[in-house]
Image (cartoon, rainbow, N blue to C red; front, side):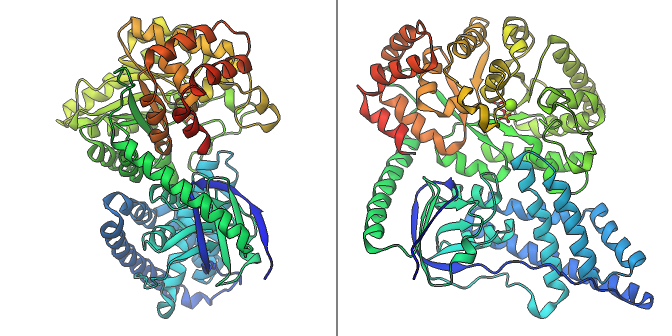
Length: 589
Ligand code: PEP
Ligand code: MG
């Protein structure tokens, strides 16, 4: 047996080890097959039957997953059921059968390729990942064209194993991970925002994705260690390595149990200052997981995902279904729904957006929405309809100038009037806020904040635009410094300006999730921290082990220093070294 170490992308922390169970890949037909013209109608009937079977199968699966894993995880199958109803997708398949006389298996393969190519052209990794939903549904239909080989809806295996796969389709991921017998997951493909990654995180199953060819290097029954914290996979390790990782696993599991306990404790510093941890989510099924990690609300719902679950444009009801699901699941806690942040890099196949020379500075987010008002109104109507419980807030991304807020308010009023006329209920007091992500908006925080109910600082983009450093370009990543004195001065100004105006202010960028930068934000007066839910316990533990007074004093002095490095070293020295509890936590994850 060969001992192999592989590096991938750790997307769900922790260590899992055990025997490998290789997942069978889902196969599309690779053979171009045609049919005689006289068989076209019969072929289309085959398709119709397979679609019906698929629908029943999905409904059964949805029920199973709901009872095994909870209501929210059934949602993925709702998305798949919606794809089944997508007219443009099936019109394309039907056209191939009618006009090219393609056998339906081949017509589906072509449709799949077309959508995969369209989605592959999207730069944003999160968006790209959604292509697997379409593949998933199409593969299921192909399987159902052959009734005898229908994929089993009810899995039976009970042995605890490590799941290794080339790629996992979303429904397969939900089905396999819900069995509670998966110790860890290792996958050739995938990224941090794939369904598998999201599910693994929410179920606390260690996972490494992006391993390229792990499936070619193992066979069923091999032994494997998956280190989801460091993104490492070890195949057939010698005993000494197994022991080393067993120790690491025990340490991590203890750390995680402690963190989970923290999730239930109060969000308050040692000297009694309250703070509010909120969650950033991308899918409605993440709500329950977010609360289990200690979230006290959904601080950012990136609504773009709604466009990714179908091949055509989402309807008002599609939007509404997602928003009301989240609002209900979070109730009475608040939910900040951000209107779509697409355009630019996050272009979508359905929208035929032209490529721009400089997408980050182009027609993105609110700029895109104001250019596509009918689309925007659909979203606004759906958010308003979902606000009946009075816990929904609406957040506008990438605002640059006051005029944009004026335009949004006008449209918002128009939509409210329409709904009133139609006697549709909604929250008339629904709070409206803006993201501060563009430096120009930051500099006029005092002007903007008077016009809205709250602001949320998107530090990911704010830093990118303020420092002129592309947030996803590794060549300049050394310059991407959240602790750059200019960034900190700007953020302090934004927070303190909002507080002076007695308006709510949150940070929903990565700075809120890092113990060191979060401490600085706390000292600036910030109390709402919105982040990927898995980081909430860590931030809570850090804040709970410190006195606000101590932090404020240290940060005051740090703000007189001249470089990011000086500031970082000073805070570590003054706060974290003296309070190892807070420090250790920052390091382990
Ligand atoms: C941000 O820019 O900080 C933010 C939260 O938005 P996104 O990461 O979705 O651009
Ligand atoms: Mg942003």
